[in-house]
Length: 248
Image (cartoon, rainbow, N blue to C red):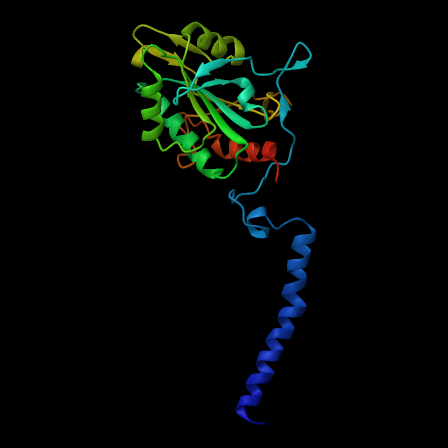
């Protein structure tokens, strides 16, 4: 037999082995849902949901808690209310533009999340300033530009101080206060609230089945842990946003 004939026989043998061993394994992976979304289709979110458990509602007096109605001016001078977020999954934070401590970290983490869902028109962010006397529409506009905010549903809102503080402390139980001597003059929670398309507060549950309610917004995915050993929540938050968005 000629040398070239041996080459053809060898190639045919390799193809046969591939068909017998490898192809059935691929088929088996697909049948058992082991192929992630990023493998099976090309979408703007190149990730898969690892935790398939249902997200919990925050139940108050026997009823799931909805976002308290609000209406404030955004960075573009438009009036934005909770009704503008109906039909969208969104995150809520309280911050101020001159914050020297946790706000820059929170904003960077939110930009990271924004960039994970670049084409989802049903995803947004609601950022409420707790220093509305300084954080005017123009200041918030510049802040958004400087941090690379591109999502049209990310609204930086300012307005009546009392209404904003009531929304933070009573509406979300996300602490916010003007404190003399505090860094920047204010104290506030470093957590994010996750809201579903119907306006309900949602979250994962702890080991006892209770809703965790909020997600830590200060620790980045890259850091993984803070100096106290607390782990980051951004990875979980991205997965949970994807759950609420659905694979549309």
